[in-house]
Image 1 (spheres, rainbow, N blue to C red):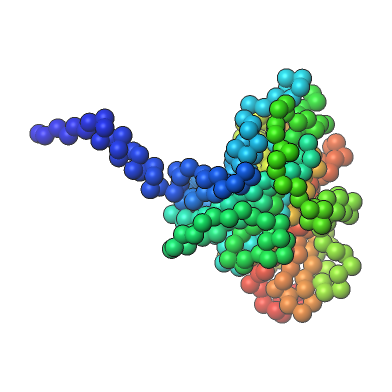
Image 2 (cartoon, rainbow, N blue to C red):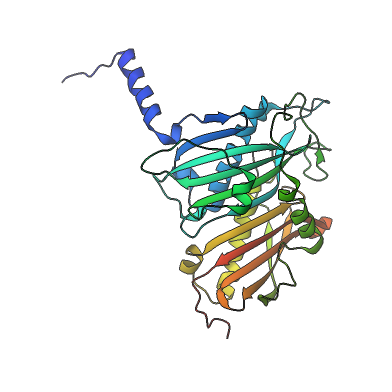
Length: 342
């Protein structure tokens, strides 16, 4: 029986070659002082359930802020020595018909560029551009506000995230989280987002009215006036490593509840999986306790001249504490017949 032996030099060479060639392990490239580029191979932990891919967005966001702001995201403390976290407050995802986050699968290779912006001392804003890797690579470029808001490429998935530094006001409680920036973080060198592109008006309106949808839009007519789903926070699944309800878990909670409404409307699971989510907006107004009972209230509208164009809206509240948790609005293209609901 023969014995195979490997020298440490050969083994190290093989490992280095593997890391160099594998996009899933590629080292991010700093484009300029405020942008990172990555080529990523989709692995099983990144795809399928929406929360898995959204969780990757959090990692890319934190990594970009760490690199461009000279901070250690996972160990930050405020002036009082308390742990502070870059928590998601506002999220918007804009997708083309051929690049949906729930359609990514094993082995897909994507290029991701994340650009950070100065949004004050207590917040960070990042823009992401995600596209399927082309056969012929080109030099990566930052994501500009002009591109995101006015000149989007339909073959790309764009994400806008506004994050706020927070800490707990009471140990072990997820209620009454307070703004709290870490010491020493450098943001003055980052570009400032022009006022005309600020999401403040959008999320302030959503908090007041319970939707990002213009209720006076004459092109849409109401379909579902109210559909309620109750949900209990699952401490074994929904919490992150610091026992906050993970922001990506809320995306999954919304979509899981939307599937219940989808079936209530007489649609099947296959059509749900094939839906095209063109625009998803979320404003997170509070976190939830690890044993909370939440109530999700849905409304929906359809476009009068194309009933496959629909808007679904959900408001999540914590009734026991009379708290608004989040507001989310989704613009969806479905496969439903134009005669649906007639």
